[in-house]
Amino acid sequence: MLLDFMLPKLNGMEVCRRLQANPDTRSIIVVVLTANARARIEVGTFSIAAWISKPFSTRDLMRTITLLLGDQPPA
Image (cartoon, rainbow, N blue to C red; front, side, top):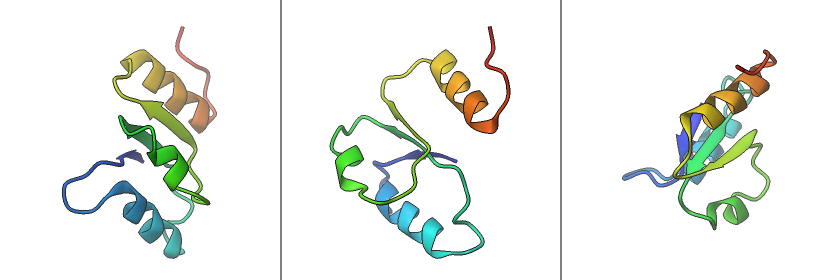
């Protein structure tokens, strides 16, 4: 899941709490996209697979996703 921490109604931290509280969704791989440098500190014990700061390059995003899925990164 690509998750922006700065959402209009439900922030990304709450989304993580809800995902991890539910046995059906707690194993979802979460990649955080954020312009908020403090979000990394505030998340605490949540299992976040990767942090990507905005602005980001599509190539870096795809490389991160590919590595997390266990495939070879694109050349």
